[in-house]
Length: 128
Image (cartoon, rainbow, N blue to C red):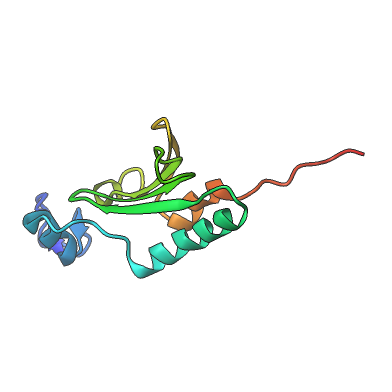
């Protein structure tokens, strides 16, 4: 862990600590990526939606400031949804977000599983 230096360097609970790999990524420009657990959660939702016939293709982008998993109905269209991981927002709004085609943020949070809850089907009462 590296201390960002907010004047409390000597204390155990000092200000903002970031993992060493995050500090190296900022200095060297290594792109942000989804780890295995995160990708497993995303692909679980993706496979469920493909089985339902709603999604057909995906793309993964590893950018210097964020990683994006884009979902398409057809490969030639704009993405229906984007699942983004932005580590710089981890302490504020949460590192994960689901973004709709128009750019609207549907859900943002610290835990990927909760953010992916946007895609869970809600039960509806059907009257006969």
